[in-house]
Length: 623
Image 1 (cartoon, rainbow, N blue to C red):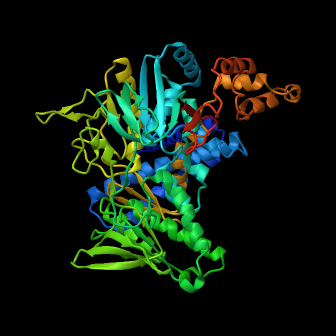
Image 2 (tube, rainbow, N blue to C red):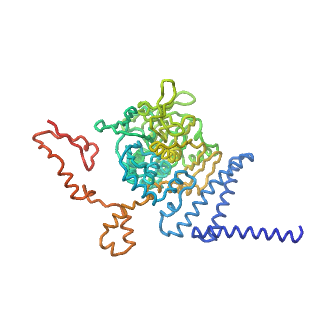
Image 3 (cartoon, rainbow, N blue to C red):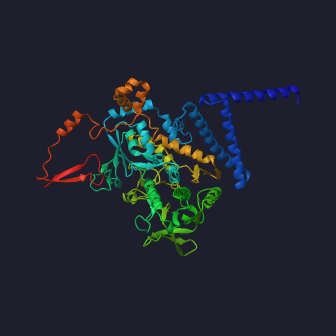
């Protein structure tokens, strides 16, 4: 090559390198980190891609086209890990000692609902809330259930309310768990507050009425909802949205013998009760037999989380887990995780084996019978090869064969063969007409596990409810305001990060199967960032802040601006019953009530307030 050509090539290379370094330096400065740290981080991410490509090819040799597809998925994972590491460095530099900074700095760009939240500013929110508060109520939007999709709808309604619309949330459970963090909670990685959304707080943020109750029927003709408690009146609606999840199918077993995972809102309490029973178990009655029923991703991940936590608990109690504990995973299928790639099945089967979990394939659980005189219960299983068998257990966790609530189809809404609500691409429920068509004009919507999109069957997984939340908010608003609906089809491929209970995880996406320690850090970061948006990351309300600051004690005012800001951000303190209104207003309201008769004259019946005690009650006086 001529010298002048070599010189030009060298100069071009040097110029390109200088440009890359300039861009890297600029990006590092914007994050508040050093160029050395920035370059080291990217070197680590490049190593992740190289190691991941080698590991997947070693575990599952594939031709070039498949290898390229896997490489694309690894690059996607690496891009998420790059973002996580950058945010960790940025948070440590800009907000040292603030553990929550890494969750609030930036939204999860790969999740559409999080991008939607980031697009709504706090300033515009306050203007919209003030405008909505001044408008008279002309329509009722009722949300039934506190699932993942409704959690996002409530958050958005707090940010961008609809003028003239009164929002009501009806839910049986005022705390709803994030399903992605439930196995981590079981394994002991998260406490209850870290993986549960406080629906009471979220409803207050959305200015929504919260009804603690369970819907058991819909009258689409009168547009009213019937609650399980017959003493409570029907609740009217103009637009209705259902996100009620699923429950275990009817299983032949005595009440309380099995521990169902669904509905997940109640599983945390059941898990705590199971741990309590384990701690009081007599060593002489060992082994302690635990069976998990279900060979899908939920059952496998839960079994790994359970065995890790139970071993830790036994070790703390001074009991040998190897001698005391026996965990079994039973599934009716011929293999585990049939909806995942072969490599994922192999990696998680190996994880189960490493942790001593016995796997029984071809065992379809039909029911259970209770033990007598302190003996173990028995799980009745039909065998795929014919015949039946029973498996002894002390605890049986049911993580399979969930079903929709019977009242959904019983209310006249169209359901599929499994009883799940049939919705179209606009998330609208319908009613079958005499000619077999579906009437979608009911103004009833649904999302999450209780619904199935016509023509797009998907497994029942929380990721679909999370992604449906953005479109559900848009479609509810469009219905209320007369706008155009937004089509939403559940994604065909999604990223699954399945924890092994010991600080590791397996990535499943398309034909990718990858196991690496850093994947747990990535999963933890994604899950905590999602939770932050609906808990600690709720925007402060200016009216609440101003009221708190104006009521600050003299010591806080004298201490200066920092003390006032801290006082303003403090949660509202309880002032006792009736303290939320002024004394004069409360006195006038009480004085306007008719004087109640004496108990000697008329009988007093408490209609509401005994079964579910609260600050108030409803009473009736009779003869």
